[in-house]
Image 1 (cartoon, protein in one colour):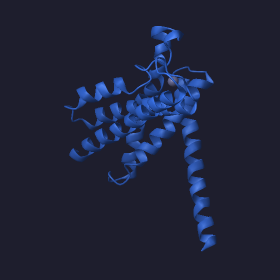
Image 2 (image 1 turned 60 degrees about the vertical axis):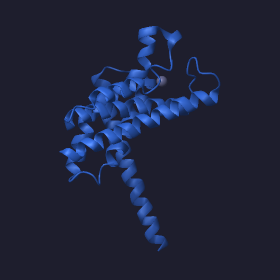
Image 3 (image 1 turned 180 degrees about the horizontal axis):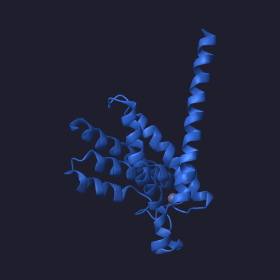
Length: 185
Ligand SMILES: [Zn+2]
């Protein structure tokens, strides 16, 4: 029985390692494609890809074939990358002084998109929007572990609470939205 358990965990480790290697490879191509060289961007992008893999995996019982999961992943991949970039656009738009402000470092834009997209029934479009949400969510949660300071929000705990809650809601809403569209297809 113990040998069985060891064999099983060995297999799990191998599979996780394989997915990590695939994620790193995909990340390499995505970063090259967008001509991104900073390690900061690479980290956010990799976390985004890993989160998207986990996100798509949660649909394995909802879709008929594994191939479909792979398609779902690749359709959402680039929108997810944009989602990981979006929160840091505050540096470009407002300057470094406005970096990590709660408008960009929140799910606000994604929630607005969801509000307007609720009429759309297209699964393809839903995958793009959900991918974007997963990207933002993964960025906020990664910033949480980075103990990032969010402007205008006092104290470390409230910053973490803000990032964690927004990140989590991005992932949950993306899942609910996609699940509701998969049902109709
Ligand atoms: Zn950030």
